[in-house]
Image 1 (cartoon, helix red, strand yellow):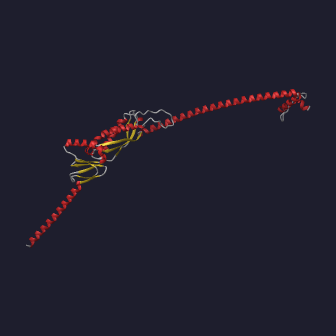
Image 2 (cartoon, one colour):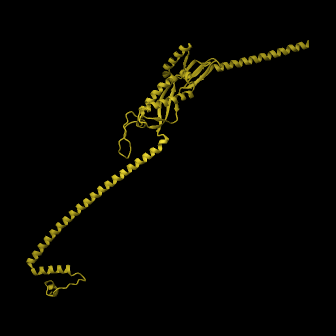
Image 3 (cartoon, rainbow, N blue to C red):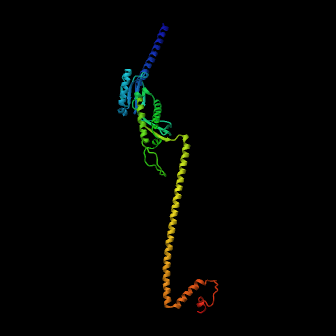
Length: 349
């Protein structure tokens, strides 16, 4: 009897432990179901809820609601027509509900402006010039449903952008000359050399706008809007740098030789003009000096004539003294007849 009672008590204990474990498992499963039935969409995010890979619910960011509305409605209609399943759409960040894991899985996508950056690549212009273009693009996800069904991840969209942006850049650049890619307007260049430059008819800014429009048109099927495609830099391919540098060096040397030649020519003109002015000034000065001398000689002759008329002897004395002054220098020896008139005032004072 005692053994039977003991057996029954053991069975009751086992049933009690099993019941407790079952209740614990049920509670844990319930809590897990409740926890995985609630999900929170952060601010500036979209979300797509899928059931075994198929979308069943879409949450869009309220800041992108206006621009997302038309394209998302179109995507939902296409999906419903194809699969016969209606997809509810809700708006705004916060708490949302779904079936517990693993029945429903949530994928979140940023609604912020995202940036795509590519490595520099070579493009050929219509005038057969190679240029190295480093570009970037800015885009935003406006249709999370289409994005989920087409590319699924940001890595996937980066790959699509890589192919499409490069293809469009090649097409647009290939229709324009290199000068159109380099310059935006025909505004004067700040150079030391006054030279003519190629005219810009389209310009870099318009080319980037054309590229942006075409890339955006091709990327709409992936649920994104391309806001901008810009050139970060336009350079020459590395293999062309040496030849370009040699050409630039030769051009600088040509300009330097031109400046030297122009400088020497201008120097010769200035020197010739200076020599001319010196000759003219000397001629004018000599002319004036001769005029003054002639006037002075005439005045002196007049004075001498007046003196000669008043006192001929005194005039002869003055003239003789002037002759002595000019002739009889210190250390001068002269041989002359003692009867000479020239010695009159030396021998007979």
